[in-house]
Image 1 (cartoon, rainbow, N blue to C red):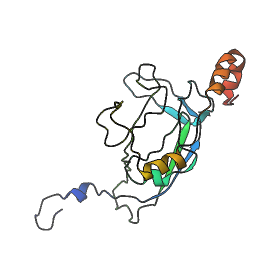
Image 2 (image 1 turned 135 degrees about the horizontal axis):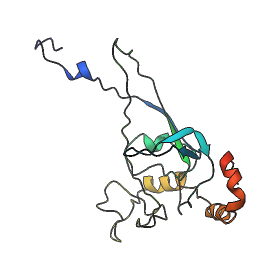
Image 3 (image 1 turned 90 degrees about the vertical axis):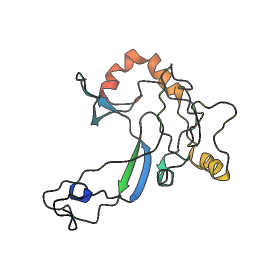
Image 4 (image 1 turned 60 degrees about the horizontal axis):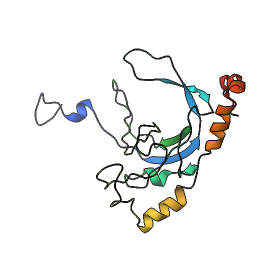
Length: 192
């Protein structure tokens, strides 16, 4: 309640937003969570604990973010982003809130992030490659020859330091070629 207006409800009487400090961000390979049975009129859901290591689709071409510490890339919304490939996972850790939850309240978390999603659908323009990279000032995607990803020293350093990992398409295609003999391995979560 608002002390200056009896009966008025302040926003913080209902919701008290609190920003949390990002302590770490780690990019690593995890695999693919098994899909749960589909329900009508519901989003797809997955069993996080049940992981399949092998991919069911070929990887995109191009440079992905190297594994390890990527906190610098996610701390600020800019053109330097983490580029994840199929099966990658980024683990974020935040400092716990200092304040206790008031009696009768519940604490929920909402994560605000800025990014782009590019799928490998055959009908997606440039869907088979990471490039061209999106950037904040672009007016359309894909952008035409008159536009380009920024080439400042900071952007060049970002590309050289972080975007250094490729994905091996041959591994996927060998697996598809040998598919009938690997059906049993697929059920165990083993990668071949």
